[in-house]
Length: 369
Ligand SMILES: NC(=O)c1ccc[n+]([C@@H]2O[C@H](COP(=O)([O-])OP(=O)(O)OC[C@H]3O[C@@H](n4cnc5c(N)ncnc54)[C@H](OP(=O)(O)O)[C@@H]3O)[C@@H](O)[C@H]2O)c1
Image (cartoon, rainbow, N blue to C red; front, side, top):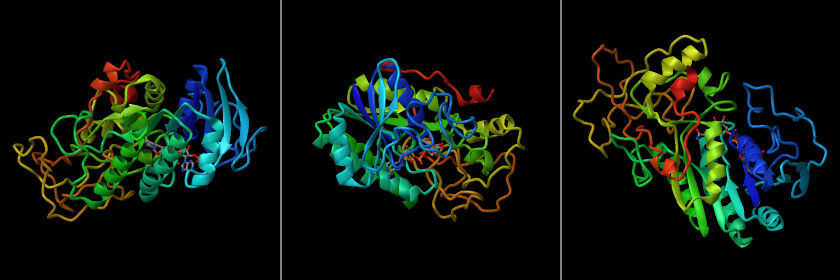
């Protein structure tokens, strides 16, 4: 199958490419750089800051066959599969249309993010404008199937892990979160314009090259310690799901592990795995009565100023210390009931399992050992 992969040099794309090539597909991979730091021909276990680098990569160096902007250059392949790298920017519509038309793909894979600089406005933009341009180019080229990367923590508040029928959290009182979820919803709606489409709602990635890798962002951040629940996902399982989605029916699918887990549980185990001191308790959100936990409720009130995390100002990653309902400086008693952010509820993977996917790494905690 001819597949156009946007985001092939990203944390998932680096693992996805080799899987697709091994299955015999012909890839055209998009990158803004003639010599990407990693490419779709690298081995799945070979990339990332906690690894030595992709097999065959030349740090900072050009590759033979590397392409100039707007051009294609062969990279190689195996088992009948092949990779042709093209250089282009998803914001250059005209160039993108040309590149996709020349590639004549049957499938477009959207694994684009813009998180390298932790600029969440940039990531919102690529979800909105990048997706628009990519899907327009795909439809103009007669592509039947688009498979896009989304997230599994954009659901509205509730007391149980969300499934795919749970509405997205488009009415959050938290403006930053609402903005993020609106961008996610836009990405998903544009993807659904394709005749066949799959939206992969990934859990919080861990493994080589991710923020949760040794030396990654979270290893150097103040960690949450409260009740917010995260569904994690090993990056290899993310890549496997994208490969499997080539034959899935249209729709959104949660791609998460089996074990949604509160920060109070994963945080100390994570630091122990890094041989760093356990995280200090973060200021809790407003204490709430345990009865205030029915589905759909937004936990706590918004009458307390937002806590500013020490190392990050993101508002939308459940693994991080932030919230809308905090008591700055509050001293914790042993019996204090912390309020969970209602949307930090985790997600279920029953649909993905029904489609034949299951995580090789079913639990972040087990992975940490
Ligand atoms: N579900 C999750 O938890 C999740 C998902 C994704 C990422 N993350 C985190 O975010 C961190 C960074 O993610 P990442 O490694 O995927 O890197 P990234 O910097 O977000 O880039 C991802 C991909 O998008 C491509 N891209 C970005 N802007 C583009 C543009 N304008 N035109 C064409 N292509 C563009 C990049 O290609 P080029 O740079 O080669 O042009 C790259 O292949 C990871 O360490 C990970 O932990 C988490």
